[in-house]
Every structure is written in structure tokens, then in C-alpha cells.
Image (cartoon, rainbow, N blue to C red; front, side):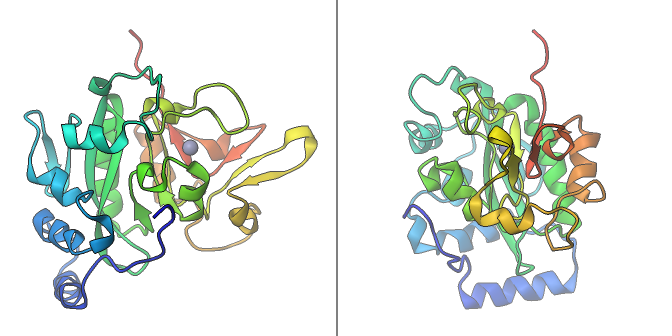
Length: 260
Ligand SMILES: [Zn+2]
């Protein structure tokens, strides 16, 4: 359960129908209900599907576009994350977090539903950014809550999972990460690893992404300054970990919490 293989999210029949829809006219306002319906057929995920969360809207739900909405954490979502990404001693109140539902195009070119938990301060930014990425068919392999990986950032990165909130310290330090506040997001992390130099020796996280640490090489899913992710996130006031001097976090975009 900890690390899922690339299991099919769609039954062959629904994949065919979606493909037909998709080939006919992209971008099109895909029915969120349709995507969630296929999600629910994924037996491995049981009741922890985005469909379940989406079925009972919270009173404060904000829908940016069809399939792109955010809302306060429902009791069901709180139950999913408490003790995992929302660990003991978490100083960020539930009220400051939002559940964000997005659509995205996976590496097979298929539309999928993704789940993100983020700080309320960036929920609208992320809804707008992921909508633009979706329209541009920007490939993202998967967007699942890190709780599906028992909150293990390394396992999530190895699975190339895009994720945001996780109450944790910066890898290799004792200071809280921007992820702990839901103010940072990692995109396609396997292809965009985190490169540090402890004691002058290069360390790549996840280790499986070492082959992608050389940014002079050309390979798919690479985030650089020409990449749409870089453009959209920086337009929304985020900084990119790939611009840092002493270390490079190519997967990482973060924003500072507003003052007061
Ligand atoms: Zn990050």
C-alpha cells in the first residue's frame, strides 16, 4: 500500500470514452463527475478517492473552473491526513488549510483527477496555475496526497508524485519546511530532484533521480526557466528552488505567507 505501482486509474471502457472525448476537442470542460467516477473504480483506493470528497461539498467551496475547486477540510479529509501528513504537534490549524481538487494530463496523455492540500493563502493561485497547466496539456505523472505514501516524502518523490502539504522539516535539517505550512509544492519530483552538497559531496533526493541531476542534459519533464511551470508559478509570486544558490530543488515552488 505504501508505494503503488502504475495501476490503471481508468477501466478500458471509460478510458476509451474519455479518449474519444479528449481527441475530439481539447481543451474541453471535462465533467469532474466523470473523472471522479472512473477514479472510484480504482479498487485499490477504497473510500479514499477524490470522488468521495467531492461528493459532499463544504459550505465554503470555491469553484474556479469545472473540476478545479477548493474548500475547507471536511471531517473525512481530516481523518485521512491526521497522524500522517498532519502529524502530532502540527502548528498549522486545519482552518488554514484547503483541500484542492484539480484535473491534469498524465504521462499517457489522459485526463486524471488530482488531490492537493495546501495553505488557504495559495489555494486560488494553485487552482489558476493547475488550470493553465491542464489547458496546455502539461504532463504531470500523478497528484496524490502524500498520505497515500504514509507521509514519506522520499517514497512519494520516487513515485514521481506531485504534492504540497506535509508537516515535516527540511530534509537533513531541523527547520520546518515550507511544505509544513502548505506553502510549497513539488512537481514531477523524480525528474526534478533536490540536489544538496553536505560536506561538499553531492546528494540527490530522491536517489533514483540522480540521473536527472545534470541539468545540462535534455530529457522530458525537466523544469527550467523555459518551462511553463516556472513561468506560471513565478507569475503568481512563487520562487523556484532551481534558482537557489547553495542548493538546487528543481521540483520545488514556494511562496511566503502574507504578513500579519
Ligand atoms: Zn519541495
